[in-house]
Length: 393
Image (tube, rainbow, N blue to C red; front, side, top):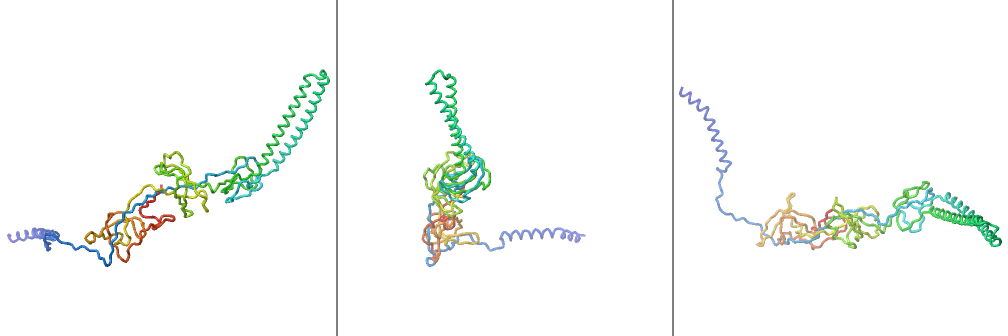
């Protein structure tokens, strides 16, 4: 009986005890109880040193460059004219089309003159009849005057006044006929529509045979020499501009930068966008037409940035490192964040180094002369120097 009890005890509690022992052993192993420990103390590390035979030292330069603010606008002409007819008639001939260049006095449109010429002929006939009536009335009046002088009692005062009235009416009818003839003669001149100024036709809104009414647009033209960039500029920059200031304007379609002059500032700010409309006059430029997209570049501020040679950077995957050379000749590897390319062979550093520190550069990849590459158009790695920040509104 006792032996049977012992066996039952062993079967129940021995697996439990073994589990506890194994658990304690695992905990001790994970905590390093069975490993050889390093004795406490200081261990001197051997830092990498600059090798003058294969490496050169370049400083971390502090470069001061302007921050450029960019605003976009549209090319418009200040001298824009809409051509329309002053009379109702039918178009007989149109001498221009979109793109035609015209000078003052050039005939643009000819209208049908037949109806107006008939009216003028009628007016001339009416004038001739009125002049004949005037001559008859004048003769009658002259005879009445002579008769009264010879025989005062031969004609009553009322009869004499009637002769005088008919004469005055005849004079008035002649003047009326002359004015009507002159008016129709002016309308006859309206049948030929000529250019009043130099310009380029941009829109043809009617065709030959169309019947036109007074005031209805037929042609649109503008003077290419009056093109301006109309651009909304944020308030703080617009207040710095004055009439006559010269600014840089870039036309994307022409891939060209033009120097413009501030011609007009609207004395009112837009409350929604907080901008002021500025109109910049542009010189007459081949290929520049109304409606094109343009950008104006303005210096908003000045910013300092750090610049190092591109050859100093070591890349591991997407990470970038440089070796900073200390005063004792040892090197410290640091993680950096780079920005835009700037000076020839250099790049902007946003974080990781400080101005005045020195970095190691392979001698066979030493940096070239520090010259700014002039921009010729849209920003590119060589044409947008580091530190020149260009932003749009």
